[in-house]
Length: 358
Image (cartoon, rainbow, N blue to C red):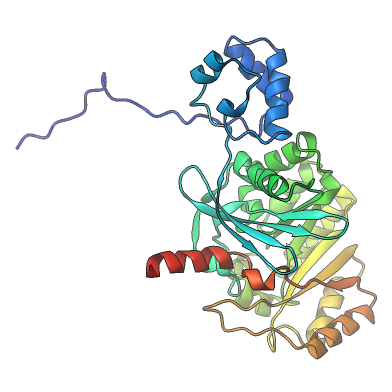
C-alpha cells in the first residue's frame, strides 16, 4: 500500500501566539500600533491587563466592538481556577489550569499587614527532594513568564487585596527556569508594582546559577533550601546535591551576598530524627559562621509516600536554642493552611489521585 506524504503547499505550521500578559507599557503600545490602533490604546490595554484584571480582549469595553472581534484570538494569558481550598487560618491554595491543560499550584497567605503569594515556576520538578510532594510527581515543563505573573494577579483578584510579597517557593526549581523567572520578577516589579525587596527566589542550588542570578543585579532575596548541615546527609535528602558539594554551594551564596548586598535566607525543613538534632544545629551554625544569613526552620508537613515525621515542639526548641546560642538569626516558619494540604504539590497530587480513582 503506497504511503502518502503531506503536500508542503497545503501543510500548516502552528505559530505560538505570545500572550499580552508580561508585556511592558512600551511593548503593548507598539503592539496596538501594529494592529493599526492609536498609541493611547496601549495605555488603556496596559491598565485593563494589570489593574482591572481583564481575562480576554473581549472584556475591554473601551475598545470598539469591531476591533475586539478582529483581535479576539490574541490571548492575554490568564489561567482558570480549577480548584480552590480554603484553610481555617485564611490561607487559600489554588490549582490553576493553564492553556495547555496543565495544573499548577499557587497559594495566597494573608496576615494582618501583608498578602503573600507563593508561586510555582515549573509544572512539576526535576530535583527529586525525598520529602517533597512536587518532586514525587516528576517534571513536565517550565512556566512561561505570563504563567508566573498570572498566579499573582489571580490571588490578588480573588482576595480583592493588593499583593505585597511574592515567594518563588511553589512547584519547581526557579533557577532551572532562570530566564523566565527573571522576566517575571521584573514585570511584577515594574508593571504589577511589587518591590523587588519583597520578592524571594528559592533554590536547592544549581552550579553557576546563583552567580547568574546575581549578574542580573536584582534586589530580590535569595533563599537556599539547605535542609542539612553536611554533604552526606544533604545528598540523601536532595539527590541533585550529589553534583554540587555543600561547600561550593555556600561559597556561591557568599558571593551572591557580596555582589548584591542582600542577606541570604537559609531554608531548613526539620525532619524528626533525621536532621533535627542539636548536633545538626551546631554543625549548621559552623557552616554559616561569618555569613549574613537568616535561617528559616520549617517543621515537616507530612505527605503520602514519604517516610518522614514532624519533630516535636521540644526538639524544635532545642534546635532553635542551639543556633541562637551561636548567634545565628533564626525563626520557625510553620506551614500555613495545614488543613488545606499545605505541603508544596500536595493538593495537586491529591486531586490527581482522586481523578484517577474516580
